[in-house]
Amino acid sequence: MISGEKFDKNFFSSGVYKNYQAFLAEWVGPVAKKICQILRDKPSAKILDVGCGFGTLLAELQNKYHLEVAGLECSSYALQKSEPSVRAKIKRGNLLNPPFQKNSFEAVICFDVIYYFTSPETIRAIKNLVNLSRDYVFLNSVYRHSLHASQKRNPDSLRLVMLSKKEYIEIFSKCGAKLVKSFYGENGGDILVFKKK
Image: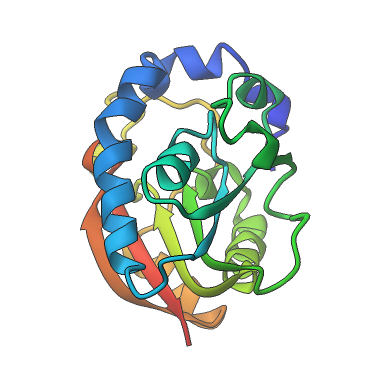
């Protein structure tokens, strides 16, 4: 896994994240709404956002939809820049050794995180996502063969592993979750919705 210190001010102001706040503004609202539609039968759901960055999605889920939220972030820079309304709810750490018990959350969100692990770590990270959730896992990731994966179009020098949609489905299945839905995450690419078996 890449050290959290690599995700510094330079990371959040270059490449795909050159205009990070504008990038967030484009997709956070619509994606939060879609997540809440899927969780409509769980109005008081407890949600974990792994790799929550500045906590913008957490703040939207808490402040607009009144969900109980928690975050996990490895970057000290992102923690310093996090939304004040959720800052105290974000723990510093990583997905390989999460500071939460199994089945602690109705849903776990993990956007733009998985490809910063090595191949062996990826399986462990996905297993932890499934273990932390009681019900759903929302995963966003660029696919190996998608246009968005191109370093020319979407530069990110820290990416270690790119998988296909089929590979994500297979790994999640082995870890105890099945794909039940997917939707377009606005500027963030496809979002795969897995449900524990």
